[in-house]
Length: 308
Length: 173
Image (tube, rainbow over all chains, first blue to last red; front, side):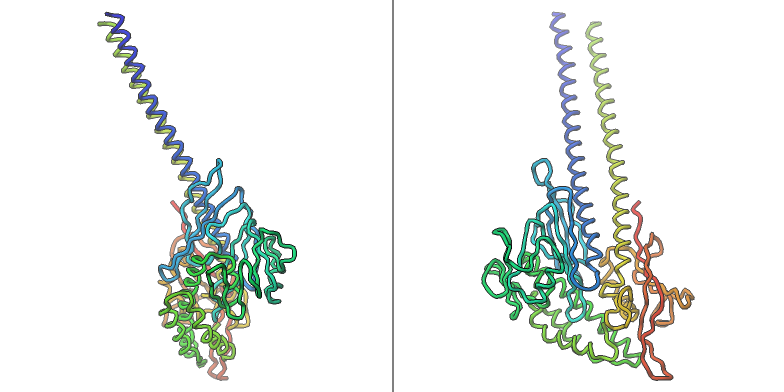
């Protein structure tokens, strides 16, 4: 009888220790997993923010196209997010890394109002190339940033001389100015025949399969070549928002300068541009205002007090 | 009866021990989290600093500030007339550059510490675009250009002065 009681006591003690011990180990494992996940997410959020910050010199660069390589530690997916809400819309960046044989959950999104990144979403690789080119419509609106991976190779077939020259000068490893040495994986960008991406330079549109991307300026042509349709349309809408805000600034500046005996003649045209952009239903407004933009550009060039 | 009491004592001892172990793990966890979060705050401040440093070196060339072709000077040249207009519309641009303050200060020929307003522009020295009294700042030298009218000769000319642009960011506490 005594023996049984003793056995009961010991087994209860063991049972108690096992249950509480299991709870402690479970909590410890849960905590450790959470800490690792938070650490990974933190790393990705910092990475995305750093990537955005590193793009600063490209965003407000000076002059023509510049290319920069971006090597990363591990295979990474960069998610390009775009939203048109607010005065300027938002550029979001999220990253996900390939670790322990699987893709991590994308980290916290870093958002910027002053950046315009054109790419596929997601764009994947261990090394990326970034190049930027100014967009002027009719004044400089921003520098557009094109993000491509080393895994995506492009060649430009029969490109106009200025485009071919620019591509050669960029010296970017995944871009070729002609398609003579292109392999099967290379995406052919053609200017006068049918291939993967067709550019109709005269009618100002890029065709990818069924999708047509309308553009103005070479900088938007590159944007259409390198990005997904949703990203392209959203970013162009954002650019139009900034164009509208800048047009308002120049309109007010003209008023200020006219008080210094330097009257301008752009107020009416700028007003028309602002209202056209305000009432725009989609990004295709760039085509409908292109003549007005050209007109404004010419008038500004010959004004006594040029506004920009 | 005695054995029963000893067993109860042992269970109590074990329970206290387990509670102590749990408290120990909880404290270790808290310590790790505190160290982790302090590192995170430092990283966030470093990122803000990096952003401010890179931004200040290029901000003068951004379309909202730059002289463009309107003046002879091109790189690191701020169109003061345009920037003064920008100040009136700054509410729309509050989060645009992701910094907490932007100021433009004239440093030569003379500085009387006058803050620019509608009443005294262009006879002023500091244009507080995004006013911020506190914070750490990064700065860069720029030329400040504007159109001026000479009433004696009836000529409009470009007037450029030496100034600096300050970008302010806050240390995350």
